[in-house]
Amino acid sequence: MLRLIAVIFAGLLTACAIQPAAPAFDILILNGTVYDGSLGPGRKHNIGISGTRIVSVDAPNDAMARTVIDADGKLVVPGFIDPHTHAAIDPQDTAATAHINHLTQGVTTLVVGSDGRGVVDRAATFSQLEEQGVGANIAFFAGHGGIRKTVLGYADRAPTESELRTMVSLLETEMRDGALGLSTGLFYAPGSYSDTGEVVALAKAAARADGIYDTHLRDEGSNTVGLIAAVEEAILIARQAGIPVHISHIKALGKDVWGQSRKVVELIENARRAGLEITANQYPWEASGTRISNALIPRWVMADSEQHRDARLRNPQQLPAIREEMRQNLARRGGPDAILVTAVSSPYLGKTLAEIAAAMQLDAVDAAIEVVIGGDPSVASFVMHQDDIDLFATQPWVMTGSDGGVGHPRFYATYPKTWQDFVVKRKLLSIEQFVHRSSGQVADTLGLCDRGHIRLGQAADIAVIDAENFLPAANYDRPAELSTGIDHLLVNGSVVIRDGRYQERRAGIILRGKASFEILCR
Image (cartoon, rainbow, N blue to C red):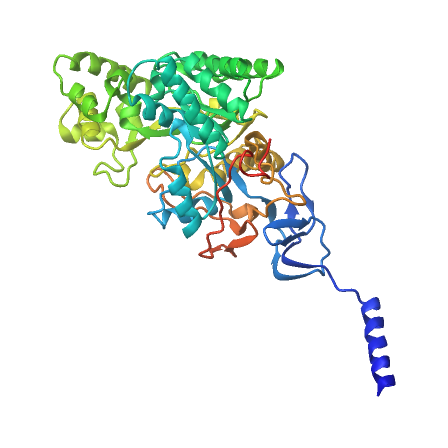
């Protein structure tokens, strides 16, 4: 009996020596053409994933895995990172925080707190999101506007020295708690009430924490200082604060500044050659998105509160001056036919300002005042020229960003539209350029060092794309249609889309800056 046992044991040892066990992974992605987030060309290789991480980028075809994804004929890319969003983060809106509209575009990480807004009740919001689950990863900016409101409300004045110190202290807390940097919305109240010196003081605090400065420029058209002066201000802030600057949704807004994209590119190129870190993001749509008040109402009218705004809009002594400024702003926006209401909850949904004015039997400006007082809905404003869009798209320092919010098709379709417009139709970008500017370039710019690339040790945020069917379905008439073409999507190693179907999984996490999250770095 002992001899028989010895023979069996020896046989088992021999079999193990002859047939070693194949590598085992949780997930194996086979046969795809991998674009790794760099500017390198795509190549065929297999990706092995264990837990939340990529553990092999050259796995054998016969490797063992619990889940095998055959990506033959498909593109395998890092999950896209959207650097400027107004994505849903309200824990009470559990349907929206699944982020299906982003996931079906291949987006796995969303940056919120943009345009200076910050995140209201951030600690409680993020705690609830982590407890109940969130569809995509969330990173955040500290918002200049939110900080300013805390200290000054909507006062149209400069802060005192004491108030500015309080604002800096609030920003420093945000940075310690994980903000990527400082965001401003200098076009919007209350950010519009600040001068450059105030912004520089705050940007210096963000720089000390190794953050970046993300800005909605003070003017993207000819409303106030003008597009060129606004870009020059952003470059000045970069120089004086010693901080990388990222210009959000770069554009030339309105007929007055069409063609000025060439001068903007020249300014930024010169700044970069001088050693400043200036980058930008862009969406491919010809229409911007904002509220009708932001598009048309003078900023001095919006000071203090909505109640003060509405009182000024009803004041017969102030109305002549208000109407005149609004007429100028409306002309810059292309007139009443170029303003389309997109707010789902608005009774004017799908109507232009011209149609609303006709129905009210009012002048377009007076109709706009009534609409603002009655609810101030979001609008799409058709104000960009394709030549400017294309010129910005071809700059190596520009990346994709949706500026997505409810009511505009960019919330549902920015990435497939960028693919179709810039890669497939007009061939402005190569495949690797499109992937790089949607993933690795964004990660490197924001300091998300474990995202945006397919390489060993990275978080397993990966999209498998059917390139022929990567298509936008949303448009201005139907802005909430899901995009197609994402066959499979992984968020932190969890398959959230399989064979084109959402799997009802919330695998996102809250990402925090390197002061509090050790693998997030610049």
